[in-house]
Length: 324
Ligand SMILES: NC(=O)c1ccc[n+]([C@@H]2O[C@H](COP(=O)([O-])OP(=O)(O)OC[C@H]3O[C@@H](n4cnc5c(N)ncnc54)[C@H](O)[C@@H]3O)[C@@H](O)[C@H]2O)c1
Image (cartoon, rainbow, N blue to C red):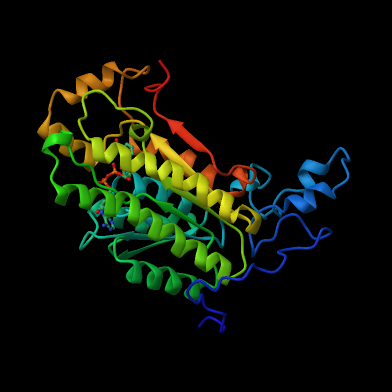
C-alpha cells in the first residue's frame, strides 16, 4: 500500500520542492525526465550526450534510444478503451509502462483484451481498464488520485476521450452542443487538471498530451461539425495555457492534431455520409486516411523523455491535409 502522502486540497497547491540538485544525475529512474538546470551544469566533454541518457539496462541493444524507455512509468489515457487512445496505450506498454485506460464504455472491445494479454506476456508493461465519464469531475479526480496512490506516481496523461457530432450550425441542438463541449473540452480540462494535481502531490515531473484535431485548425471539407471543430480549437489553446502554468514545475503539456483516422468515430461519419471518405482522401497529400497505429510514435515521443524540451506546442500529423 502507498505511503501516506500529502493529498491535493482544493486550491491550496504549493509548489513542489526542487526535483534534483544541479549536480544530481540528469536522469532518475524513479522520478522521470531531464532537469534543464542539470544540463547547464554538464561540461561539454565528447561523451556528454551519453552521460545524460537514462541508465543502461542489461538488455541486448540497451544503448538504443534509452530516452524512450518507460519502464516503471505510470500513465493514464482517457478514451483508451478503443480507437486512437488504445493504439497509443499499446505504444506506451511496449516501452515498458503501466497504462490505465479510462473510458465510459461498459466493457472495452476484444482488441483491448488482446492488447492487455500482449502487455503482460511480451513487454513487461501492463494495461488496466477503469470505467469513468470524463464529464464527472469528482470521479475523474478520485480515479487519478487512486491510480497515483496505488503506484506512488503518475508520469503522464493522454486525453483522447472525445465525440463528434455532424450537424450544421443552424440545425445544431443545444443538447448536442452541450454534449460535445462537455466531453471534448470540459472532459479534457478535468483530466488534465486531475493528472497535474497528482504530479504536484507526488512532486514529480510529467507529460500531458491533449488530443485535439486538425479540425481545430481548419474547417475541413466533407465534415460539417462547427461545434466539434471549435471544441478542438479550445483544446489546442488549453494546452498552451496549461504549459505556461505548469512548465516551471516540470509538467509539460502539448496537443496533438491528427488528420482523419479510421476508427469507430470515423466509421460512424461514413455511415452518415459515405461520400466523406473520397473527399477526405482527395484532400490529403498522401491520398489516404491514417490508421490509429500511425500515432504510436507520436505518443511515445511526447510522453517520454525524448521530448523533454517540448511543451506548449501543437503536433500536426495529418498526411499533409492542412499543408496545401
Ligand atoms: N478518428 C479521427 O479521424 C480523429 C481525428 C482527429 C482527432 N480525433 C480525436 O481522437 C480522439 C479519439 O478518437 P477516436 O477516433 O479514437 O474515436 P473513438 O470513438 O474510437 O474513441 C473515443 C473514445 O472516447 C470515449 N469517450 C467518449 N466520451 C467519453 C466520456 N464522456 N468519458 C470517457 N470516455 C469517453 C469513447 O467511449 C471511445 O472509447 C478523440 O478526441 C477525437 O476527437 C480523431
